[in-house]
Image (cartoon, rainbow, N blue to C red; front, side, top):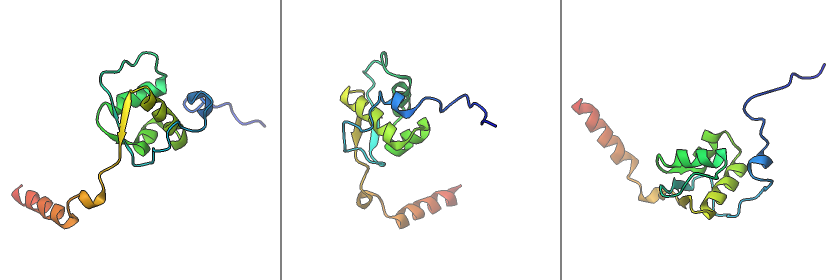
Length: 119
């Protein structure tokens, strides 16, 4: 007996989404690289996946991993899409804030405790 034919989401193969490419044009993207969208770039001519990236990233910076999760795409496919959008000037990237520059966990806990005490 043959398996039932599946329809719906996930039928588009990754190589179709990336125009047959397996590698991004940029090797600087890792899972925690932050991505933001340019507001002055038109969305016309973009694939549905690239348009969705733009919609997601216009709401604020997201990591590469978060973009992949929202799109339900593999990281490798997401990196190809992001590289294309960087090349076209639609998005920009930056590294995450280093842990050493973040406030101490103890300080954050004290602030949170103080706020809760005021409620």
